[in-house]
Image (cartoon, rainbow, N blue to C red):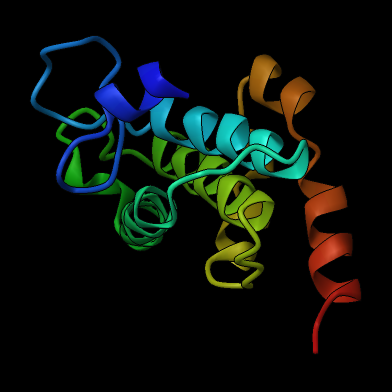
Length: 130
């Protein structure tokens, strides 16, 4: 957790390597999953760190094309999927962009399809609506 804390940048996201100045939109959701797992296991996690990360992930979900390398639909949909999963694991269950993610499911690469079941996300979100 201390190593993660050192990689968190002012925007709330995480750098992929020490000293980098830009948050990585692929690493940050994985960091969120690790933090959520640590919280579930009973570790004391700094609330400011989690809140900054949630803010970053919400902005990433809303605008994945803020990164120059992520302008095409497959990239945007994958980044949105990863951000949505990470937010859900941190307790922020929301349906924003779920239809976009679902509609782009056929464009995911095989790794993304294997790692993430977008159908189970959709079912869980629908089941957990309040």
